[in-house]
Image (tube, rainbow, N blue to C red; front, side, top):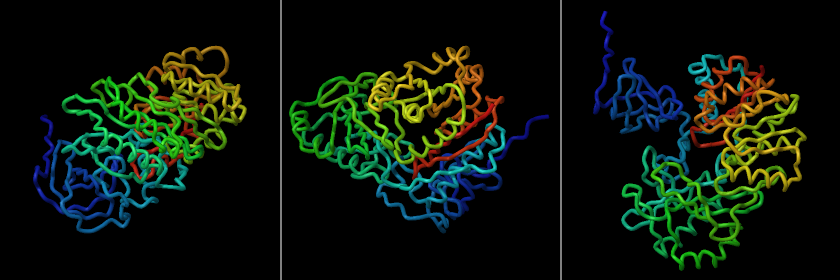
Length: 456
């Protein structure tokens, strides 16, 4: 029998009155028209909109809002002048309690639909005490439009820059440093990289700042070449270096046609190649590319959760994808024996130096991929706990297989992507969820940080 062809009840250009029912994992509103799923960017549950169909596929369509006829009860006034055009935030118009409900819902749906396992009856949540002005690192994009320098984050779904003097989720000194650098770059007419022509010099600016030590580190991402001498002379002589407690200015070379922000080579322009951060008295040396959570107050909450889970177990702890050693050093300070594994070699050097700064000797760090090092721990000394905190793509099958061979009593999985978290949990059939916490590491955005305790 021939397969029945689904009939799409709309066509591009149709205008409809729609009521937004829920939100997808992307944060976009979702509604249905004659059983057909429609995604509505910018729509919130309860909104009634007049929208135009801008795209159709066999499974779903996309709607552009022409007019909002009725506001959702969850909708609030966003403070940012470039919201929602800027892609840095998604939820400035959604009240904060509803943001938390959304994130728990995304985790629950991922477990049910991807992992095919029931979510825990209670998923604990750790809200941010400060939903704005929390982010300690910014990677700014640059462009030149009509001879005007634009600095900011990319607009939603594009590589066009949403120029703004200030970003509400960044720590204030980062905004101020960016505007100081804007003035210098404009004054000395530093050549800005053109992404479409693949020509030019300065591609981006990275600013990192510690709220506890007040130190800052500035990174310029460039193609091969050097800054104009007058620019460097004024930069090095500026009183703003002292005002913002800048410890170093570095140049990162990236001449590849890629979306990856940083290249492999970094050279010192002024000062030091690192700055110092501090969490609850624990000191960290951080270079430009070393991974550290972008929300320091929420990081402390996350580390406390992990410590409470880890200290009840026996044996050595493996901390995979350890970055600059945040979790490893936190646990080692509590007297637990830890081995951290990280592919980015400069981060391992930072972690080792941080261990020395804190007089911590119960922590070992290994440079290399998790795939390289995990097989070494499948035999020999007992591993009681393995912590995995992978990038958004999650763990490879090779890592999961090695993890199952190590067979620790418990696994602590820290994730910034609920879908790959669910996929990986489904692969760990020998383990079951004992506890789960959603930590709001990224307020005003759709991004979700989850910590899961698994027992064999």
